[in-house]
Image 1: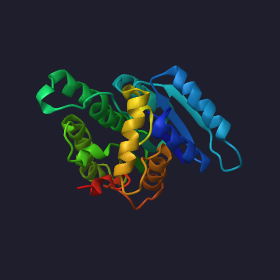
Image 2: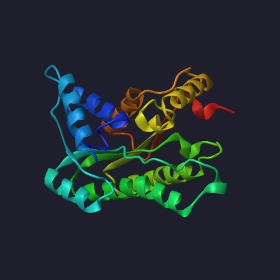
Image 3: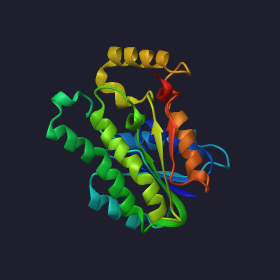
Image 4: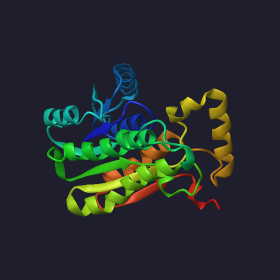
Length: 243
């Protein structure tokens, strides 16, 4: 099984690469930073052990660069599964302060690269393979200040059923994480980040925020289960159950 993880050098993408490689998959990761790519490949290589571990390799590719992404899949040849974890900074805030630049940036940094990466991979994907988008639970959350995040992630989730029919027998799914402890929150600063995550944990039925490995386990499920398509799987610790 050959898997490409776009955005696979940190956080959820890296945890998914480690899990799939440990299960014997051949994994290829991409990211925008050479430094992070090399660190990820070293970490994945250090974790590899035993006869079930699959080979891991990677390349620096900016998913926002459509030409570079198309060229990548032309070089790679046949691929069984594509996982897209690309995300962007910003987008949170009240409607009253929304600017055109904020909205356009959120779309360009997530919605556009997800869809155009999937398009670029079509010629390489094996029949019966899969595409998995990683969205966010903000798509269905009723919280102030997340209109832009909800719009972008909701749009991605909305295309899943239609693409599952359009691209069959290639399967199309999305995994929608809630609050996950990754570097995505680093822009808050250490103290604010710790306070936010502690508050989020206290508000969830499971009593903790998520880890990248929690989401990776769900991604592996939709990738390996050939009877799952057109589905959005939420992994939020019960956050959607809050009043």
